[in-house]
Image (cartoon, rainbow, N blue to C red; front, top):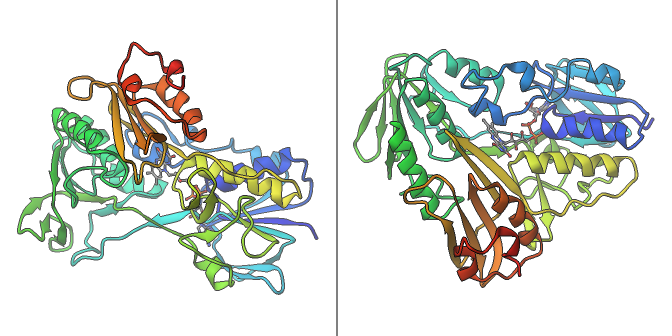
Length: 405
Ligand code: FAD
């Protein structure tokens, strides 16, 4: 049959379901997700859902009745354990098997764990799913001491929410500055300043050596001999793509399930989309593995087109965002390898500026902090690999729209 099966029920999968029907596919669609919930958005888990400002109904990607309405067979709480490519079927953890005509793998990623002594103590948390949020929220009492391990987006977003809830928050970061992997020191210093002003303690150059306590964590010890007392810990040190199912089925994996610009894997009947993939990116000229909503949505659309025999190649400039306090950080492109960072606005005193990353004069990325116009414009400029004049970027008398000229 031409049944389409989808493994994983997150952002990419939900998009693919919607796009498959929009593309006119009227065959059977079966979706399998190992979480007990219908697909939901993860970004709010470290933002407004964590703070309690919004509830689950606002986090769900589709209304409850969407899947039934679209004639989709849902298998929530069902883990897929094997892909049998010869027989063209999948096996589930509860011992069932389902045949497929075409398959979409959208298994996402999982948190990287910090395997130091004490890793299994109560009170050591990670943040990837709804249940993680519930465990973390249980500690949200004014005055509670929270240590965040990792000064990346997720760690800093959690810190921002927690300090506003009256917690005593310390962020430990191994590098000499926060968000070191993705932004220029100018942006790191800005965020460190704002967090400190808001009451968060930021400790850089700290490598966690162990979690200490009897059965529950009571302090975090660093390799540098420091000790940070705590009531609980949230670790945010990155993710690992879920590629095992694909690898065991013999599909090519290269830092993510290798797909082409049509989201096709090394098996023409199998597509993959989202965090679990790596794709060839024409803008940067090499393979990328991205961890973003934009990538999951666009690959979900592309995969749906491919699965229905159409073409919608995916070749876009990545973008990403992070919300901390009143700051909306929007990142366009990848700054790796930049030769010059040009600042527009004043990061020393204000709360609104943008950093333009040039590589030999060509725009490769922009970090926009509370600067929607710069963000919108830079999407186009980066895609066009525009050559920009640093003096004009700095000059706020030159309008955003005139930067290209
Ligand atoms: P996921 O949404 O992770 O979905 C994959 C699903 O597949 C999961 O439910 C998983 O349990 C399931 N699964 C895996 N293996 C199996 C199996 N064998 N059988 C059945 N089911 C399986 N991105 C942004 O762009 N902006 C942000 O501000 C932002 N904030 C974030 C904050 C947090 C706390 C987190 C965790 C992520 C954030 N992201 C953000 C990243 C973004 O959420 C992900 O890039 C996106 O969810 C990827 O979608 P996906 O469909 O590939 O994977």
